[in-house]
Image (cartoon, rainbow, N blue to C red; front, side):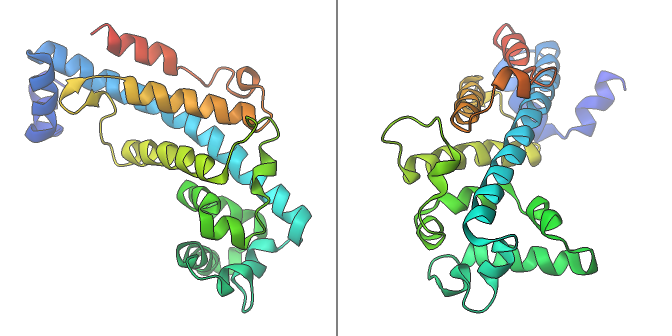
Length: 220
């Protein structure tokens, strides 16, 4: 696609933000494409982390409450049904079950739920309703780590995940070129993978190109 068509295709308001930060069209186009590459790389790492997180929660809760712990949680009298303040999680599970319909299985239900849902299992209400034991999925967590800290960290990761999913740039801090937020969220994911007991190098082997993508933008 010729550059003139490219500027039109991505919309003027979106392009102007890059142009204002860069000062010329060539650099703006280079940054726009570099942001896409960084988003792709970081989204892949977040996806791996999300799968490990949800599977860790699932294994823990199966051991604690049985093979259909999540289905039981939203059944009449279940812990999400009975607990005030857990409405978001309750409705998320019910909606996922309804959407699956005849294709429902427990594994498909686990896969259907979003990172936002798994994040909120560390919110104070959900955490307490489930028995206040979920920190055990992080065997290598720092001494004294509280549920609130894990929740806040997951919120940060989910927020940047949603920015990427909605095609919002992650290469700006206000109107200035900056990869600081992306780098901090990336480092946070690596830390939480370690807390989960994962070897991050093995887990992300040939998947993780975040550092290279960050370095490219920092040199623009």
